[in-house]
Amino acid sequence: MAQNNHTETGSTRHPKADARHDATMRRTLRREAPSTIGLLADAQDFAAMRRYRTFAFDDHTVYLQQVEGLLRALAAQGMHTTVALFDPEDYAEFCAEAGLDADAGASRSRFTAEIAAAGATVAYTGQHLSDLIPVLVSRAVRQATWEYATLLLADLGTCADCGQDIGRAAFDRASHLLMRLLEAAGPGTHHLVCSTPTDDDQLLAVLHTHRDPAGPARLDSSEGTEFATVLAVAIALESRGGVVLRTSAPDTPDRVHGWRLAHGALAPLTAGEVFNAYCTDADTGEPVSPESGVEYCAGFDIGADPAEPHH
Image (spheres, one colour):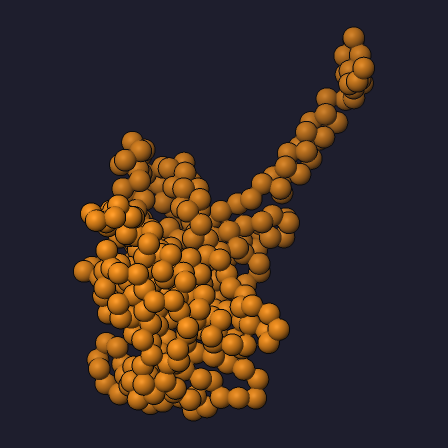
């Protein structure tokens, strides 16, 4: 039978020793409990939070300095800490829907836990906040893009003729095209961009991969899913989707190839079309100087199976 540290007449340890032991155990547990900080990275978002009486800061620069100090202190204690982007508008909606008092620290903490669960976070590993923020913003944009594209595909419903889920069929087709493109691209470090317009926005997905001469391409599964989802939107909506591939390899110039989406397939662009697309400002339409050490090449045949008839 297991024994404890007490006899029938009381504890064998002094109460102060018990208290110190309990405090030590709590500190041990605290170090093993992950922390998440909701960050107001933008000055405008910071200003929006100042309307809450319980929000203690009035200077964004000082706020960022204090956040960085907190991150360093938590890291010094051996704690794993992630940072999530705190959006005041989403926070207000969250509190209204959950019936929470928005002017309360507990509500801000609960909202931070909710956005961290969505996955758009960056782990703090000692990097400067100025380096962490761009990565965090990029990750949040990627998350929002993927969620929006997923909703677009889900809303398409089923084909009236065959009953097939249109969004699922488009995603399967996009995944097939992506795998064939990575296979045909060969060895090297590859940077792919897929863009397509929608009624509300211009969707953009980025994918980084590397392939050794003797093996398959290695890619992040979440990036691959996001890329295939945006490409699937272009396929399902038959919009003006396009893909650009930039390949880097030792001792050779970077090569840029491009394709347009046509009838569920990636149709190669000419070298001139790739040059014009890469060397034109997307916002102004003005020419942009080509990069030195970069070759602008025609797209190549990726050997994909023909697309099934569009539903």
